[in-house]
Image (tube, rainbow, N blue to C red; front, top):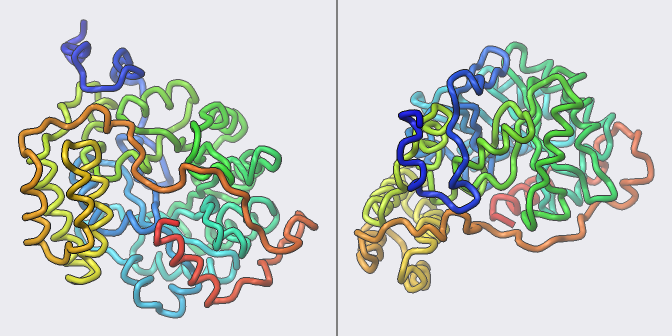
Length: 406
């Protein structure tokens, strides 16, 4: 047995991953996105209300990779909406800087991307996968790929405005099983100069229910020449190895599996480099991360909004630990870091990380939905005009709904 594999039988993993071999020398390659070379080939999924600068900071400290902001709506960015500009911002320690943009008007997208490049952004991702009802009913998010010519115009505008800065797009399989769009989206991305396409291997109607269809990722890999990034059901570092080996994708996008678990990126770096990861932290170590996270949120958002943001994170961090339900019951009174420290004293600092929490879902969306689209949206799929229903206020309301985690 190779040195890196010693102790693999006792690895901290669910049964599905107990026998997954570690990465072998030369088996995987860095993810190439234009001038960017990303190793390990791991991307933090842009998640609304989650992947702000504080959380990206915690994840980035665990290992190299690419850490994408939550989606930033073009219209609100261009009119100088205060929260939008804050969420799109960064600090000098964040390199490379990656921002996900959202919009349905090619003109707005082009102007926004040009402004971001002028600010020094290193990578632009485009959101064509958001399944939130208030987004899709305006023709945004996962509704855009239904109209390939409109998708072409939006991607073309971003790529032209970005210049040498790499542009990628992120999509879902489609609206539902009867209206799949991921292969046509791949062709558009390739044709218009996107450097990669990420596929969340669920439909918009699935939200986050059921299992991700990794076979669809393999289909997309076979259909395009640009890198494909697989997204869906990366709960443990070994899942990433299985996905890349099964599908041939160039890298993985990690979403809900890292909520309350920023150290997952350290584990991902380890397995791609052929090292057996250490066991996850015990609760005392988790509590220390939680306090640091709260401090970063307060520094970035201010004391009131920062601590409100922290309430959902306490739920995610404490998932599966004994007695954590009583802690979550008192989150409404959590208004400063001293209160957080006091709350955490209720749990045993020596309790090991619960194995059952490895694959526990940490976000909304366990049910399916009927996807809401603009009236008459499916009448002419060759129409390349932005949806007429989109106005600045409507788009901003939809974006804020997505930020709420809806």
